[in-house]
Length: 296
Image (cartoon, rainbow, N blue to C red):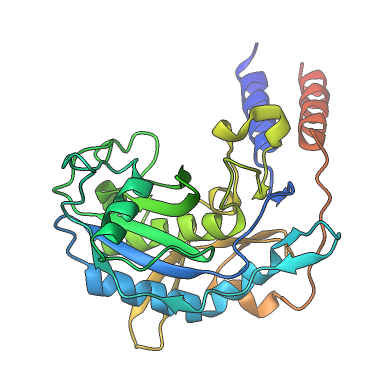
């Protein structure tokens, strides 16, 4: 195979896999409240609460209202912009029933531990937890950023399913051009966008570009945050502070949008997309075959 053919193969694979999110039948967070939780020597607590507060009031969040879930009756229920950021809670030293420190992957146990200490309000169907860990926290894979600097989960504990994101300390160093706090907020917005549109992916997938019937929920990629990964957008909040977020995929425009793009987005009209299993792969492989023949 020639170098040109290798390049064409890589191009075709990228074309096949860069699939925009479509709806697969799962629930979205129609209404949501954000509960920040800080663990360890995280030094940007006040700034992080301000970021979430400014983000949900910003024009960027209007793009979230393009996403919906389909009820049993066939009607569409669209996402509402989150209205509230609750006071942050310090969860440093959260322990299980045996007194052992709880690791990052056990977000549901951390929440349960805090609630049993009356340090955290009761969970509601609208609660979205956002964990931010300090650099002194090294358990639970928090120092491993080879695969991801942040993620979102839904964990069942007892009769309650908890929805949360984890922003690792190394997020400050791993998000393209932004560094420090800007990188943390870019990762935080990425995970928030995905939680709102695909919160219960372990139960039934909401919005993603991957066909869950083909890959399985454990291998999902190309949620609306993944499609725009690394594309930052900056705005000045109502508090006068400049903030950085990640761009978000717009169902209406069919691309990633930021504050600089929103003048062209009419969120009053929503495009309905039909999920077609494997359609992107068919087009991609046809393109690969055509180009391979053309340049052979």
